[in-house]
Length: 106
Length: 81
Image (cartoon, rainbow over all chains, first blue to last red; front, top):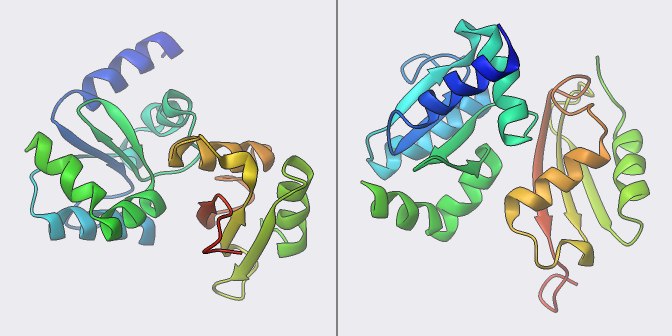
């Protein structure tokens, strides 16, 4: 698959919902501590979100890193904008910024 | 593949000579670290840009050689000095 196709697919995935988390595993069974932490934060905020399991798709797994210029997963997108990984999510959660951001979208 | 804390620190310091860096080995396995990087260069950058700058300093090792680096970036202020 070409890079252009992958980017188009990622754009569709990013745009499928106001809040989208690219992660390893599913919301029910996260396959990595960082993804698990990201899910815990979103669940704690009580917002609805979609997840994309990058372990199911090597093209997306590689492509999402180039898409956001970010080397790791999880990655949170709100209204199509890259917000950050789990460290930034935790910082923004603790400061109340994340609640504000997702509340504005929900 | 793992990295030594000194190697991580040296790579970040090479890109941010003015940075104050603290690195903790979280699991004792040379593969899970937490780093706090305090540098005036981060002024005016949002969190994503600050973290991207640190990842750039690690020249592609983040996500490959280095599995886990919890990252906190700060601009020095009176409170943190």
